[in-house]
Each structure stands twice: as C-alpha cells, then as structure tokens.
Amino acid sequence: MQRIEGFGLARVIDSDDDNYKTGDIIGGIIGWEEYSLLRSSDNLQLRKIQLDDDIPLSYHLGLLGMAGFTAYAGFYEICCPKKGDSVFVSAASGAVGQLVGQLAKLHGCYVVGSAGSKQKVDLLKNELGFDEAFNYKEEADLDAALKRYFPEGINIYFDNVGGSMLDAALLNMKVRGRIALCGMVSLQSLSTSSQGINNLYNAIPKRVRLEGFLQSDYLHIFPQFLENVARYYKEGKIVYIEDMSEGLELAPAALVGLFSGKNIGKQVVRVAKE
Amino acid sequence: MQRIEGFGLARVIDSDDDNYKTGDIIGGIIGWEEYSLLRSSDNLQLRKIQLDDDIPLSYHLGLLGMAGFTAYAGFYEICCPKKGDSVFVSAASGAVGQLVGQLAKLHGCYVVGSAGSKQKVDLLKNELGFDEAFNYKEEADLDAALKRYFPEGINIYFDNVGGSMLDAALLNMKVRGRIALCGMVSLQSLSTSSQGINNLYNAIPKRVRLEGFLQSDYLHIFPQFLENVARYYKEGKIVYIEDMSEGLELAPAALVGLFSGKNIGKQVVRVAKE
Image 1 (tube, chains in turn purple, red):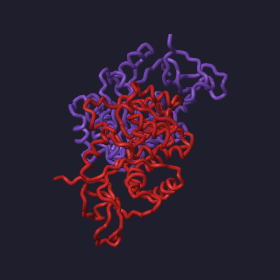
Image 2 (image 1 turned 180 degrees about the horizontal axis):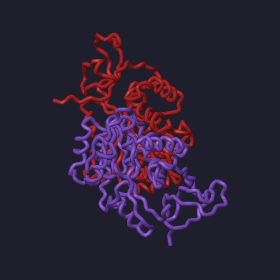
Image 3 (image 1 turned 90 degrees about the horizontal axis):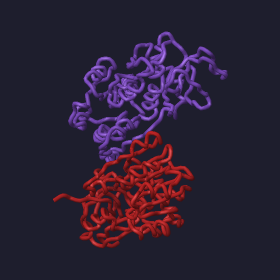
Image 4 (image 1 turned 45 degrees about the vertical axis):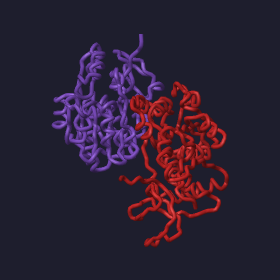
C-alpha cells in the first residue's frame, strides 16, 4: 500500500537524534498515520516547533507552516511588491491566499481576492481586510470582472489556480507586472476539457514576468518569516482561518474537499489531541 | 489611408534639427514611402547611423538595428546566461534568432535552433555555428524532438514563436530555467484553432521564469550593444544573413512572406540604392 504523506505536526515519543527529544513537538513531512518513524536526514523541512501560548499549535501547519511560508516567500521574493501596487489573489481565502492578501495590505497595496462562495467573499472583505473580493462562480466573464476591480490594471497576480483565471489576469496586467505561479495543478487535474492559456502573448507588450516557485528554495528566510508573521499575529495585524477535521478517518474526505472548495481556510486534520 | 511604418534607414534631404544634417543616414521608425517627414521628438529610436566601410549599410536594420538589439537585450538581460547553459532558439535563422544563437555560442553555451526548412537548418549548422538544428515541420512530436537534443533539459529558451513549440519547451525546462518571450504574435495571429498553452503548470515544480520584453526598455545599453556586436562582426566571430527585396512595391509581399517563413534571414526591403 502506498504511504501517503503531508506536512504535519507530531509529538516525539522516542528519539536517538540529539536535535529532537522526547516530548518535543516537531513539524515536517509525515505519514497519514497515528505513529510515524522519521529520519531527519530524509526530511529537509523537519524542525522543532517553538511552542508559544499565544499561538494555536495548529497554526504551525498553516500560518507559520508550509502554507504561510509559501505566501511569504512568494509575495516578497517573487512578486517584488511596492507600496501602492494593485494586487490580485486567487483562491484568496485558502491556506496561502489569505496570508498573501494580508501581507499585501500591510505592505500598502490595494488587494482584491477571488473565491468560490459568498461566505468566502464575505470573509475576505470582513475578516481578512481585502479591499474587494468576488465570487468567480458568479462571473460569466472573468476579464470583465478584473476590469471592474482593476480599471488601471494589475501589478501583481498571485496565482493559486491557473486556468481561465490566469488567462483573464494576463489581459489585465500593467506594464512590468509580476505573476507568481503558485498552484495550478489542482484545477488542471480536475479539468477534463482544459482550453489552455491563450493570452500569454500579452506578456510581451506588457513585459510581464511569470515565475513558478517552491517555498523550499527559500528556507534561508524561514527564521525571518517565523519572527515577522508570529509578531504580526500577536499584534493583531493578521488573522488566520482554518478548517479543522477531527480524526484521521476524515483525512481522505478533507483532501478531496479541497478540489471542490469545500473547505474554508487552511484545511487541517486533527489526528490526536494535545 | 493608414500609414504603415517600420524600422528603416534613410538619407536626410533637409533638416532643421541640429542633430541631423543633410546627407546624414538615419535609422528609426519611418513610413513605407519614398520620402518621409520625421520628428525626432516623436521618434524615440531615431538616431544617426555611424557609417563604417566594413559593415554593409543594411546591417543597421538587422544585425546592428532593432532585430539585433532585441537579440542582445533579450539574451543578456532576460535570459541571464551562464557558460555551459543549454540554449534553445526557435525561428533560429530569423532576424533575431540567428544573433541569439551566435551570442550564446560566444558565451560558451550549447545551442540548438529550430526552423522551418532544410535550407534553414543547414544554414544554422553550417553557417551560423549552432551545435544542432532541426526542421520543426518534420517533427510529429516537438516534445520528443526537444528531448532528443536536450536529454538533460533546457536552461534557456529564447521563444520567437509561442504556440506548440513553447508548450513543448515547457515540458523540457531544467530547474530555474528562463524563457524569454520575444515573439508569438505571428503564429498566434495565423492560427485559427489555437489550443493555447497547456504546460505552463510545469513552471511551478521547475521554478521556471517566463518574461516578456521589448528592446525599447533597454536603450541605455544600445551603445554597448553597437560596440560589441560590430566588433564581433569585424573579428569574424559572427555572421548575419539577410533576405533583400528590391523596390517598395515588394514590401507587402515581403511582410506576408514572414508569416509563412518564406524569407531566409532578416527580411530587408530596399526602396532606394545608396
């Protein structure tokens, strides 16, 4: 049977590695299982979690984990944000998108997010501080929707979905706009009749840069990320929304739910209580 | 009637601009016409041509003109070349591509070009110094063709065509590969059944950067370009191939011929002899 893995948190029961002692909480790539055998040499992202009474433990999976770090590295290292930039985020209430939007607001940007339900759009505007948000499922013409929110164009598109939203964004980029390609596999893999991207040629007259990235290339700034984002959270400057499923047996349903947008915020599966 | 313009050379007949005297040869955006009225204030790329007995005048349209500068700026400023990089150039015998490939060779890269006829492929290998070249019209599977020439992947793709060649290149990029988006309008505008780009998602795991550019953003390095490329030419390190049509009345046919690849090398239309 194939062993399924994901980024998780666990308590150390026993260890012969001096960096991890019994009782420590660690984060890293672990199996979908109740007990795991981990080797730090195989697990580049394995690290000891510094517990903090002011931060929920599960936030080390999302806000202070791989998802949050993807947002942080992608926004600062790929998007080259400037104060006043117009920023568009797709899948904006998701694990990554919600932090991208909030970091962009803290940076002095105008921020619009797209999501797939009225409830998510309300969250973006009322809880997460986005300037505007829209439900892409209610927009017959994504190009027209973007022109409504960005009449002067988009400086930064943080792309979590690919497909037709990326195609529409390409029609609305400002000169020297930046597109961070963060996630499009999910939509791609669901779509049986992908039409492909037709508007990439717009990147030439507009001198647009598109760049794919993985957070694992930026681990040298992980300590800076942890320090800054934990401080923003404690200062009340950012919030984080997660969707908790209870019990390992719900993990498959939680995974499948991601593809239909069933979750609201970072999807977490709790296998054992603290 | 719409006035059609293009980058051209002309001799000054009369001038009230101190920078241009009667008898000077100038280069810039001029009309498809025998006599033109130009205003330097409207014509950002207008400049006096420094004549050189060792360089054919028409080369100031191609090798030392906008096409050559597009190759130079795109290769050095967008592609970030390193010695030993694997470089792929499409439309490789064209006005831009032939210089990209030769600059890449001078930079110590492995260079493969694609073109649309056996004659062009022979030129690439025998005259222009490409390591390998292939006729894309004879390849049923462009992905397989690229895998044949780049078994370990592509560091730099200088894209002059877009479409299915770009899609195939996206499947063959190395980690942190760079794609300079230089021209895809031609193919796009001809194709009535464009399938779009389907492999852009590969840019995420491979961390590929795609960037559209225009040479006009890099005019600050134009003097450096002129000096270096003219020197390479005089030293015999590069050659340049052009396709000369005689007479303004052939200009429309020459333009249309570009879209079917009729020309070999930089297409030039001679309106008047020196």
